[in-house]
Image (cartoon, rainbow, N blue to C red):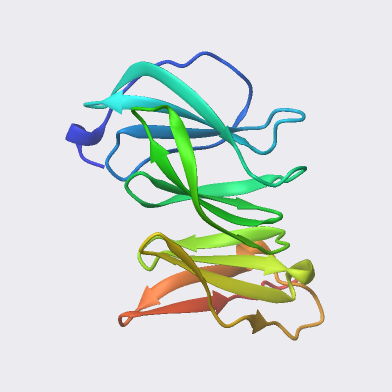
Length: 178
């Protein structure tokens, strides 16, 4: 990040932060916290010229009892909540301080990997033996062909990478020595 994209600001301490990410245009900051009973909520703060505007709002995912595993920004003003129940693609309306569901798809996931270059989420289900890729393009969620791992032990999050190589998206699975 160059000096033109650096900023410094303070936020009220509302609990431990799991993930914090700016939107691609640096106008919205999304914050996921580790709060008891609120594992399905992400907070948002609007920014102008990398300075907070003191406009804050939050959104809870659509599935009851869901836990947000993480979130990604596929496009400006679009955010995807990846939960243990599936993926929810949302349009962020910063002026209205609200989010609108664009599309959602159910999938029982334990963890995920994200490739920003190809907008692909790889969700792990069935104790890591099933890897289900989803493409987030043009405000849609497309379920791609699943990958079944036939190893004696499940695949862990640290073992999987989604990458772009020679113009194509690939899933690399690494096995670490026990």
